[in-house]
Amino acid sequence: MIESAIEALSIVLDPSRILFMCLGIGLGIVVGLLPGLGGTVGMSLLLPFVFGMDPFVGMALLIGMVAVVHTGDTFPSVLLGIPGSSGSQATIMDGFPLAKKGEASRAMGAALFCSMIGGVIGGVALYLAIPMAAPLITSFNSPVLFMLTMLGLSMAGLLAGDSPAKGALSGLMGLMIGSIGSAPAITEYRYTFDFLYLSNGLSLPVVALAIFAFPILITMLTHKGSVAEANHLKGGVLKGVGDALKNKFLIMRSAVLGSLIGFIPGLGGSVVDWLAYGAGKKTIRNNQFGEGDIRGVIAPESANNAKEGGSLIPTLLFGIPGSGTTAILLGGLILMGLEAGPRMLTTDLSLTLSIVWTLVIANIIGAILCMTLVKPIAKLSLIPGEKLVPFLTILLLIGAYQSNFAWGDIIAFIAIGLLGYIMTILDWPRPPLLIGFVLAISAERYYWISIERYGWEWLSNPIVISIGVLIVILLTGGSIMKKISNNLQREGV
Image 1 (spheres, rainbow, N blue to C red):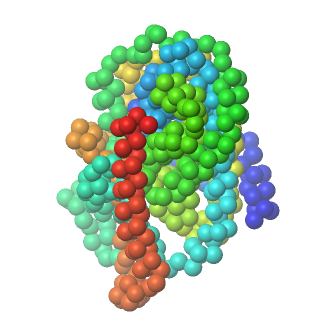
Image 2 (image 1 turned 135 degrees about the vertical axis):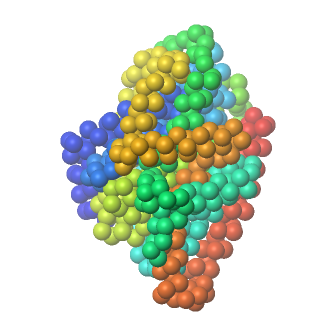
Image 3 (image 1 turned 45 degrees about the horizontal axis):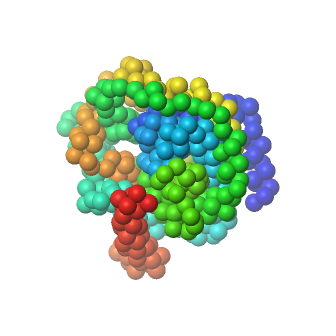
């Protein structure tokens, strides 16, 4: 395992792959610092460009972005009091009050350093999970793989906040969209309405771009205005790093919590930061959380980057995306001719280990880059949203069109984008739809293979029964954790 890890490091350090990783890091920081975008939009923007790309280069680009989105979203959370993404909500509680006190740089220094440490711990968690998961996952057959896809689909309800029913319906909608085109087991076309374009189904880049990025364009146009000029940056980045070093046990505790929560499919970043924040408030004596306590920044920022390493475990090893971002990453694997699951621990082990190294290196580079560019990045975050819309629109249309180089891509992009916007108005979760779309083909294929090989006897398989029980436990436990997180948020923990 160690020899394979060293070999993977040499692959990652290839100049061409370092270049693409740095490109992903740069884009991830920009996406993170622009309020309202987040990892799902950033990943969907990159997805069309990884089609047919060398897997090591493509994953360097994608993981480079994943690693630093929650580093970049510190800027709007601290400077503007606006969450850069769902994973930076709790940072506002103390980061913004510190900015009002003129200590924005101190808050960002602590947050960026903790994000770096948390990301490294998340990468270590992914590395340690590989040898433990290998003996189990390589023995999986089609019934078990089918149940794993069901596990991923069942997590849709957990992505819906207070409304699991909406999450489940959104996931079923994704299944329907994913079933457009030819059936895997028989020669039959479904939901094509005699349109030749639909005979091969909708492409993942079009759906991902439409469902996440299109609604953001409309939101940027309707919510005009920029940040108040009251936010001034002063010295103090190194002071923030010093504060973080003084609270090293809080960093470690929060990062481990983030990795564990990230491993549970469906919980996502909007839960982990509040749980880490609440745990910090309950365990630290004489705290002033909510009034500008630097420890209120350290706890959630340590957890949200560590969560990324944890969430990659079920995504890469079991093919179960735990969030919209990892669902798009799973789609990226497919576009590069790869498949999550046993192959990631055997044939593609070097790629899996390269992802671990990329995650660790990207977190370090991203944090250092942010710390050295605090003032310029803060100015970028003040750009009014409507000025970004023309640039993003062109980028999105190019990304959608290059999927099949057909006008149908543009029409599908607009149609599904309008669906995504309606879902945002009605407060319906969109990540479950993408998860359902990504898993639709795998679920149907494994189901038919199981029926043809084993009849209905596979339902008595002990592993199948265990996964079924696990689905019930995770749905129940996840709902309880959601309620706890919501209570903490309402109390302003």
